[in-house]
Image (cartoon, rainbow, N blue to C red; front, side, top):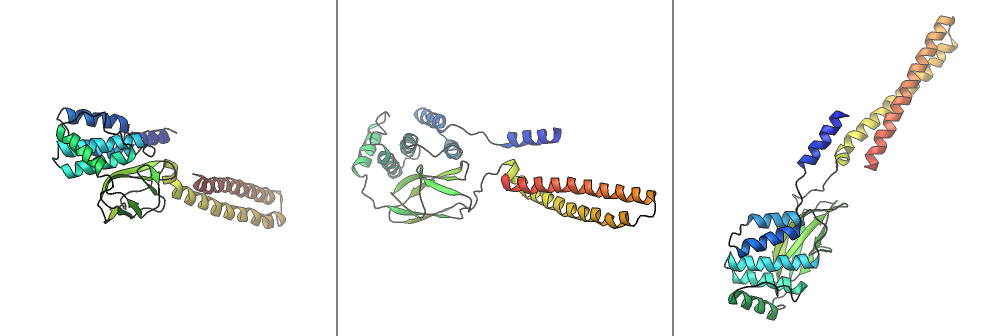
Length: 263
């Protein structure tokens, strides 16, 4: 019992903290306004979207506005800034109205609005996606390859339980972009990780239980051929021991095999 409790505590302790995307986005905006932005925030944003439910439009629009501000203020890249603003405007035409910017930033936002559909879309392909995983684009479950507007997009990978990974991609116009997801694996619970061991233990229990039951049945011959009460008693005791062992091993076998399929 203590060993199991310690192991469960270790598993819980090893699980990384899942940040709230809204909180990280607010921190990103503050860092941009105070001129102390670092790209470590980008990694935290992807990690936050990679452990939450599929993104909602308001979060995504704000992310693209802030990415546009980052490209403008930090990277001095007006092209990527406009592409980020276009991505935001496709979701919410008022996405950037609450942000106070420079005249240059305002001009980029207006240009993004005017050139919203200026570039033809591209194609996004996913490679190496595990068979137990699926992917969503900008918070929507879609099939891949997927036609995507030129600009920034959020790819979230999820299993049957929740989102396990997220990454931001920039899809070029009229280009096929391949995103390699071979490094993403389904998140497995403790029971799922123990499933092979449970099955082997259960199968071994059934095999040994069958052997014990056969040996119990073989005592019938010794019981029928007993010459005196001492031989009869010894044969009956052996039969009982083998029968008890068979019951116990069969129970372990059924529980082990059953648990390997349930969890």
